[in-house]
Amino acid sequence: MDTPPATPLTVAAVQATPVPGEIAHNASLAARLVGQAADAGARLVVLPELFLCAYHPPTLHADPAASDLPATEAGGISDGRLDPLRAAAREHSVVVVVGASVRHVDGRRTCSAVLVERTGNTVSAYDKQLLWGPEENALFTPGTSGATLLVDGWRLGLGICYDGCFPEHGRAAADDGAHGYLVPSGYVVGSAHRRDVYYAARALDNTMYVVFANSVGGDRDWSFNGGAAIYDPEGRPLVRAADEGETVVVATLDPAELARVRAAHTMLLDRRELGERRILAAN
Image (tube, rainbow, N blue to C red):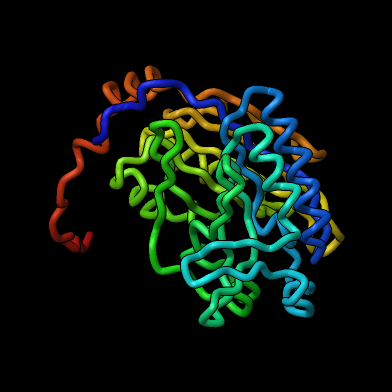
């Protein structure tokens, strides 16, 4: 495993209500929330899955031109609708991870994590690998590779919502040396139990921090349940938002705590091949 980072990192997880198909509006909303997070000390801000277009399949099906961000062959995104968000990243010197529907030059449409750097440079950083249900599979092409983001000496694996329901996805990040796992998400009303178990489990499984952002509110058919949270490497919530209302939660990732937990709980080092399974018939 990599050694812990040299310095702490203050991060924010956001829950808010974007407007379906209104990228310019949602980018301005994101910019305001980034400013709020930065004022609370955050150097990295994570916003929900598909936040820039809103997680609203009817609109994503009906109006892809309004909902998608076009990417260059290298993954760059220069859409002017994102200018307020880029300006906020520059002004506050923060890194932003935010969900979007991205249209690639080869025609693929992906549910992606978009990275806005402190310079305002914007790229499609990670495409969701594990698509949820018939709606997402009808809309998007799954990604084919993972991604690790480097911020101030911290290695941070990227996942999107349903990715985090699979232990092997978080483990792949840990195997790449991740100290944390960033998960923009879209959990609907009625899923609070699973929402709260999965990401705490990924933190404990891999002795790493987890930053979980989620949408909140919305229309009757697509209503989301908030609960944005930041989990410590033992799976305990450092901060957690309520299930309703716009909120920015902020916590500091502590390299000393990461080192303490990994020294006490050595699952990542103790793994080995478990061999074939036997079948036992009880009479």
